[in-house]
Image (cartoon, rainbow, N blue to C red; front, side):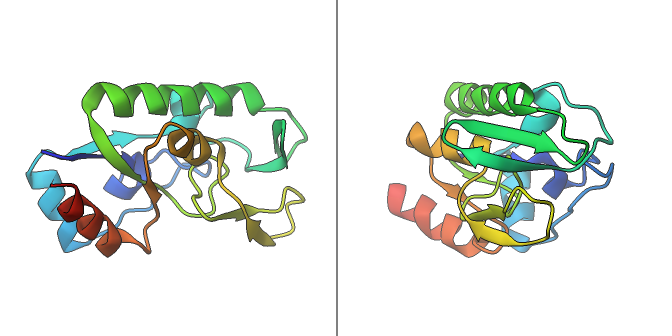
Length: 155
């Protein structure tokens, strides 16, 4: 059975920076949960950041630099969380990941610009980029139907 690494906030876990969740109620997620396919994971918490925490954005992609709104460098926690996500995905046999869009960890197509201006720019979060680098495709909450298609094509 193909497993999916998934942002824990999507399953109602209050792990976001603001102490809230991003619960998604979608028939496919419910089905995957019932089948035991989901691997809930929050890379920021796994990397050692508290709940709640100051919002963070990627200031630089190469080399990666992640700062929070108080100008504190939180890069080590983001990198650790990304490495742990890859380790967990590989250990549990995840074929792909479903992660929170625009997150500095989980965004797969776009992230905020690093200036805390609310501006979105193309790019991937630290964890999404690391998963992709290890051959694990990353989808966001607007691409749930694409995951089903991806999994079907893997069989």
